[in-house]
Length: 279
Image (cartoon, rainbow, N blue to C red; front, top):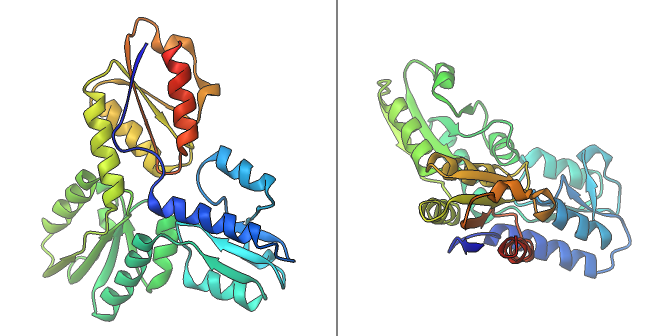
C-alpha cells in the first residue's frame, strides 16, 4: 500500500518541552516522589514510558506531600492550584506551554481593563479550566447554543482555546459580533503549530483514499484533526497506534494518509507507517 504522511504532524514544541522537563526531573534523582499533575500528555504510550522511569500521576493537588516534585503539564492550571501545591511543601516544575501562558496573562489584562472576558473553548478541557482561573467571572462558550450565557450588552474581551481551528474561532466571533455589543476586543490566541497541522492534514486528505489520525483518544487537537479530515470527505480513523488497526480499514484501498496529534511521538508514527505499507 502507498502511504503518504502529513508535512506537519506529531509533537509540538510545548509537548516536547513538557517531556524534556519531566526527563530532566527524573534524571536529577530527587528524594521525594516525582509526579505530573494529571497525565503529562494525552498519549498512553509516552505516559507509560515515563511511568517506567518513575513519574507518577497526581490526580489531586491536595494529595501532594512535603518534598514531592510536581510537574505542571503543558495545558497549565489555575494559579490557585500552584499556590496550593507550594503551601503543601511540594516543589513545582511549571511546563505550561508559552502560548497557554500568554492566554492566561491576556485574560488577566482584559479583566483589568474592564472587559467581560469570554473564552471560546471547551469548558471541560484542562487548558480552558486553567485559563478560567486567571480572572473572575470569565464566561466560556464553545457552540452557538451557548451564546445565551453572554450578557445582553457591554464590552467583551475575547480569546480562544489555543488548539481550536481558525474556522470555529471565526464563526463564533462572527455570531458574537452580530449580537450588537458596544465593543469587542478580540485577541487571536490560536496556536500556529496546531493550525499548520490542521492545514497539512486537510491537504493530505484530498490526496488519499483513507486517513489515519494517530493520537490519544482524550487529545482535543487529535480529535480536531480527525474531524477536519472526515469533513474533507475521506474515510478517517482516529487510532492510538497500530494495535487498533484492522485490515478491513484499508480493504479495496491503495493510497492511505497518516497524520498525528501534537502529543504523538515520531516513533509511533514511523511504526504505524512501516506496518501500514506492508498491509
